[in-house]
Length: 222
Image (cartoon, rainbow, N blue to C red; front, side):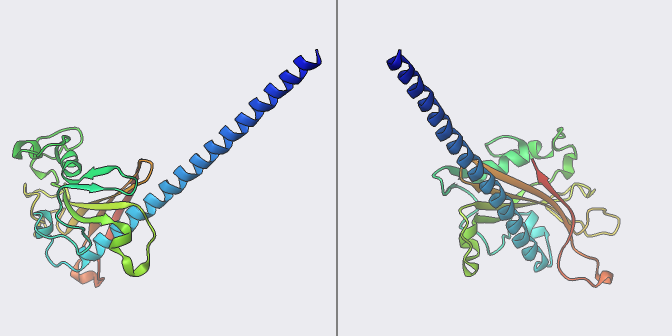
């Protein structure tokens, strides 16, 4: 009986020890995931700020919408595969295509202008273009940013424009979307963390006397 009781006690202690180890491991994982999520959110916000600085210094936004102009914060051509800090990969072309026509391969002109539940504006559907992309730590080396997140920012014409040309910023007062752009900032961090911010920004009218870019809306996509 003494041996049986001792064995049962050992089994119970082993079970309690295993449960403690499992709980500690789970708490560590949860804390790491929370940290990565917060870092990703801040990284996406920082990338959006970089994009707005670029827009503020650009007098004509049409070349950005045409894909002919990016910011200075890029890590090469806006195509191809990028290897992230955790060894996973990010295909820039596929990311842009998924936003423009919900598929990985290149979008046709008809797919860009088709009305869908996600893009109901037809010929005024925004055509997303990359303007900021690269590891956050290398985009701002002077500030010694110790981040392992990869960030991208895409710009698209505001869908409230009525000119039927998403590659040109409206230039008439009758156009509701004149001097207004949509921005989508994304951060890709370890453990599959992916944070997305969507912003609507506008250039202040000359009579307002305000420099820079004004944020009309800011949304954290969950």
